[in-house]
Image 1 (tube, protein in one colour):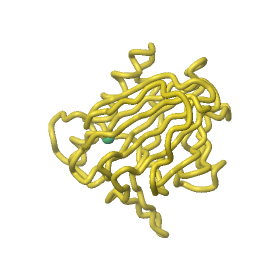
Image 2 (cartoon, helix red, strand yellow; image 1 turned 45 degrees about the vertical axis):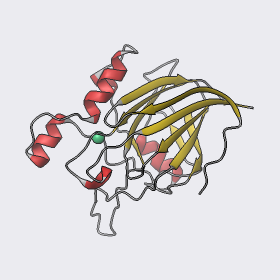
Image 3 (cartoon, helix red, strand yellow; image 1 turned 30 degrees about the vertical axis):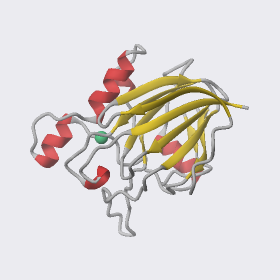
Length: 207
Ligand SMILES: [Zn+2]
């Protein structure tokens, strides 16, 4: 699917390097596009009511209200108090995860026997601190472009990734939203095809 042109005023257009974090407040009515530039890159994502960060993304309610464990076009991301944070208005990938959570140094050690490596939890914490938030504010997150298949018997997979170069999601902010990204550094399983790559983030005010 060709990427629709931006129709409006661009506020930020940033390439987020492989393994790096990103954050900003996306104001009500603004759009956030996340582009998987090279494909097969998981984008770990947290979001909060920017005016009251205790009211934050709730994965379980988002799945219940959406009637599916996969996020895609039309999905609304809800908070604990059922405020709408973002609506996914465009999606060229088709399936995004919100049950797999994020990687951390500890789980990498437990699952793969590796010492500390760059990881999403540490990326999240570094960005959250900029807004006066911390460990208690990390909740079950969204993983854009990450494929976590669930079988009929409940078996849960981790990849391999299905996103293609240039795949993108467009999110419309329904309130002022603090958005936090960890461009996942994982190299021990196939969610990133064992090869973390850059993404691009565009924020704009629609016409
Ligand atoms: Zn990760």
